[in-house]
Length: 102
Image 1 (cartoon, rainbow, N blue to C red):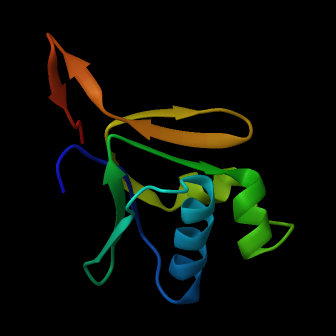
Image 2 (cartoon, rainbow, N blue to C red; image 1 turned 60 degrees about the vertical axis):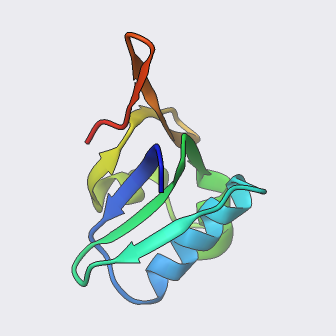
């Protein structure tokens, strides 16, 4: 995938599927790619990706907090921005050239 951005999570089981569903809800019309490497799962899209706490709560339960996702994020690609209610990853641009930072 060109210009891939998104999180690399340390998690396994059904929770990965639920995080992916939350991300899909928040990114309608975007191709989301999931790469399972065993102990880590990379979730990525081209150029921009977001996940909201509301979507995570909808899929993982009302007690789920955004900081819980941050705690299992081993790495990420792109520029990350965290607010009180969402995390976004976007393509970094330097000198007119796109760079997906790790």
